[in-house]
Length: 452
Picture 1 (cartoon, rainbow, N blue to C red):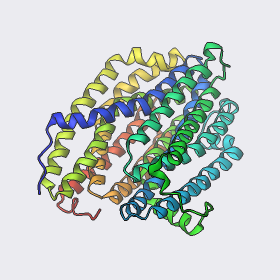
Picture 2 (cartoon, one colour):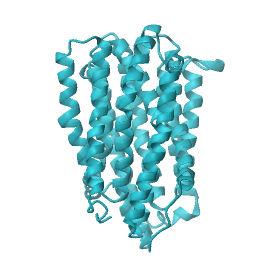
Picture 3 (cartoon, helix red, strand yellow):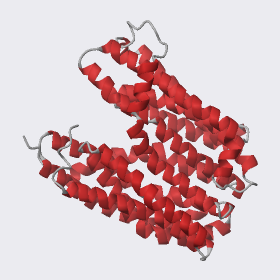
Picture 4 (cartoon, one colour):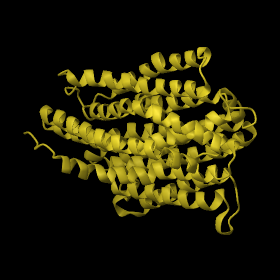
């Protein structure tokens, strides 16, 4: 039976909550963090914050992989009424999260300075950045646990509570960030370390509320009532790690590409690092409508194909591409027009501001590549073609972006500003290659015949 096609108004109704949630939970905290640290007018502080947060963002993206991999397993047990197995699986996910989170904690504690050096961070930033990265690593292990709780709830068809948990964590972060970085309203002034403490409080709050909800609500007691052992089952842990590998590659490839991008640009010094932080965060904010539409296209395509309506799935993709083009053109155009005013809010010096404004205007032309791959990747996920997305992203980064960026660093004779723009542009061109491959796959009749 075919579903009726969604109107543009219906699609926008699906999109708006995703857009608002993403802005409050993802974009706003990053921009507030950047703004508060930029107010110190310190290149070292802005550079240390950006390089650490870029790496931490990658690790947190990886932390989502295991819970996502386990959702299908837990959902199947739940649908079959095997509630005890759901509870046992959750416990093993917790142990897996603790192992992965603990591993990164140990590595960062002993090699934070070495990580900064490997990322080509100037030596004068490392004494400030290494302790900050060590502090942030404690929040990563909490993030692993928080996303485990959220993933378990989603597997049991509870999407409202995870949203509340994440929103509550973001609010705590924003409040703590404002109070602790600059020492407002009598709180200690912790400089950039206030951001690390705010992250700890954010994920601790998410774990506390999520854990309380799981073990106090009667609807969840059935999952843990008959469990006798809460220790690790190494066979289950190994299975979860193996199952999560494709998702780790998918989620990690784009995040790691940003880490690589930052390391290439860090070669050009503190100004370049600070400029990268501003360009990345403002461009990501401008692309937020596309990220929200990517979530919408996934479930619309999935529902249409579930009803054996491939025509409806294609029409939904086309409509979302049209809406995304209008929205992103508006946000990116506004960013370019107001860049001289916006940039000064987030840069530590007038020199960096003067550097960033023309760079943003030049690379914004290439943003179209990124939003195309975001939407088409979302459509392929909705069709169950997750491996196509995973391998395309990974291969594009390895075979194009990384070698091109290295060649530009080694052989470019242009100014720092031009080389910066070329390297950043190479990243966007790699997303264009991804989008082209995704488009070719979707134009073939086999793309929607994957077994989900």
